[in-house]
Image 1 (spheres, one colour):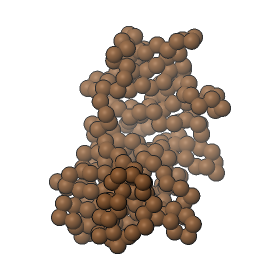
Image 2: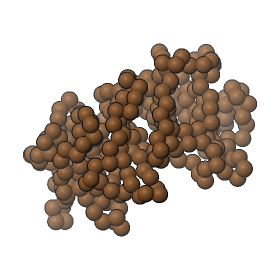
Image 3: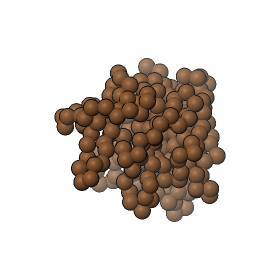
Image 4: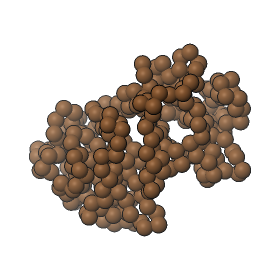
Length: 267
C-alpha cells in the first residue's frame, strides 16, 4: 500500500546524521550532523508540519566535540567539551529555535532536564568536589535558585518512542522473526528492533549480506497491510542505535546515515 505524498517527507544532508531529537511539544526535530573529513559539526532544525529544513548552523563557539544535550521551549541545548580526552561535558550552550544562532553560554554548567510548561531548565554546576543543581532561565541563561534533590531527576519518560532490540537468544525474537517471514519472506534476521504504535507495528530487521550488515524497515498496520518496506542501509560494519524514533504520529528514521525520512502514521 503506497503512502500518500503528504504522508512522506525526506531530506538528504551532505553530512552524516549523528543524532535526531524531537521537540517535546511541537512537530519539530533537531538533527546533529558531522563532516568527518572536515572535522566539523552542525545542527539543523526540521519542521515536519512545514516539511522543510528551517535552518542549519555551525555556531562559532562549537567544534567537532560539541554534542546535542537537549531540546525544549524555544532553544536547542549543546554541550561543549573543553578537554576532548576527558569524556565529560564542561559547558552549556543555547541556540535560538528561530534561526539557530548562539544565544548564551554557561561555562562550567551542563544540561540536566527541562521544566515542562516553563522557560526554565535544570543545570548541574561543578563546585570543587561537589555538584550543585540549579534552575536556569533558559531565555537569558541566568542561574537562579538551587534545586532540591527530589527535583533533579527527569519528571517522566520521554514522550517519543524508541524500538526495543531483540537478538536470537531473546524470548520474543522467534515470534517477531516469524511475523517478518510471513509478511516479507525473510528468515535469517540477526537482530530485530521492534516498536508498537497502535495501530501500527514498526519492525527494523538486520541481515548479513556480503559480510556486512544491512538494515531494513517494515511498517505494518492492524490489517497486516504493509505501509512501508525498504532497505535503510547496507555495507555497514555493525548495527547502530537510535536511528528510528516516533513522536505523536510521526515515525522518523535514517537511511544510509545521510537521509532523514518521516512517515505520518494516520490513526
